[in-house]
Image (cartoon, rainbow, N blue to C red; front, side):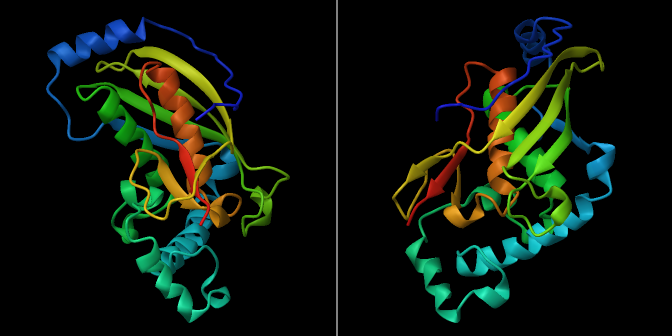
Length: 229
């Protein structure tokens, strides 16, 4: 996918990332999960629970009907979409299979964890993601509505001893790939078009792709793909 998002590089390289990670992968045993922490700006921190609750209600509807919308807006026949799209592994479910675990911090953490484990299975350090700004154009919470959807934040990488390795500032916007298939099984995070400006998942996929590409330039990080059917 062509990356059009602006990536502001603080890129404070405290030590060459490739060298540090090589040393870690040589010395450290593979971990079951990367150590990823997700934090939020003061403005967002008090709103995370509300944002998560709203999106989780939409997620519950989508997992049942495979259609974006509120429960009251979706006709019962939409349940037929479950068979129409039965061959697709959807983005949020790929990283959070259990619905009860679904929320905003967990989604970002899970996407980062998946990428780190694929790019560097023996990574033994810590990644801290701080989300400074989040706007979703048509989200059902006025304080994060905007004319465009975006996610902006910083990513700090530390080695196993807690020493800073590098830091990147990421600014991501929606620039999805599209597919006409109903049965997508590729590496990217699949959503229906209705999710683009109403849900957290699409912009989280864009943000984590940019972050992972900064950390691992040779890694083909998973991003956002929209099913147009």
